[in-house]
Length: 222
Image (cartoon, rainbow, N blue to C red; front, side, top):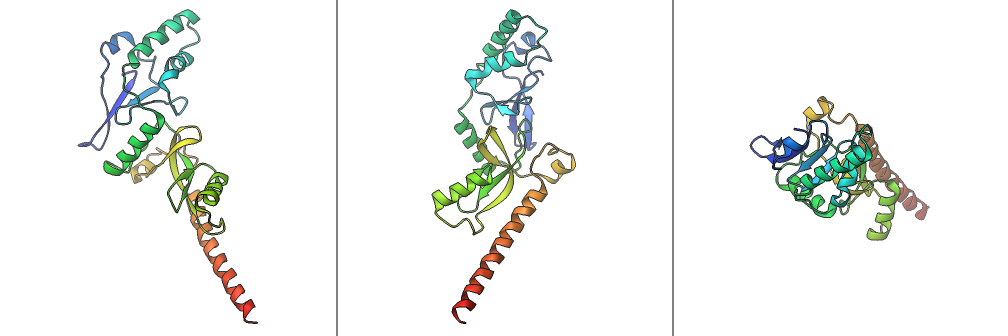
C-alpha cells in the first residue's frame, strides 16, 4: 500500500496497516505517497523523508515538494490536489493534542513506543518535574527560572526521545532489547555513552557537594 495508515492492535502489541480511504488504490500509485504514514491512534501524519509531523494546512505543499521533478509543474499541482483531497478526509489533531495522545498511549497501552519515521535524539529530563529539553542551556534556564534551585545540584538526566517538530513537542521513549539488537535505533544521536555520562555527572556533582560541605565544616572549626 503506497500510503500507510497504522492503528495499534493490542492482541499483537504493535501497529498494523489498514486502508480507510475509499477508492485510494485506484487513484494513487505505489511510489506516490509511500513516504507518508498516518497514525490513527495519535491522529497525525508523519513524513519519513523529513522525519517530521506534517501540518494539515501544509499537507498539499508537502506532497507537491516530494513529487518527481520529471513531471511538469501543472501536472504536479494537479496530482498534489488529488492526493490532498484524499488525505484531507483523515482526522488530524493539533501538535499539542497529538502529543497528549502519545503520552496517554505510553501510560495506558505500552511504554515501548517508537515512531520509526522520527529521529531518536538525546533529551535532557528535569528530575523535579520531568520536563524535556533538547539543550543543556534550556534545561539550565528552566531549572533556574521555574524551580529557582542551584544548577550545581543534580537536576537532570539524559534520556532518549523523539519530537513531533524541530526543537519542540518532545516525548521520552523506551527501547526493547530486540529493537537494539535489530538496529532499529541506528540513526539515534543518543548513545548509551550520553546516558552513562549524565549518570556520572550526577554522581560527580553529589560527591563535589559533599566535599564542599566537608571543607566548609572543617574550615569553621579550625
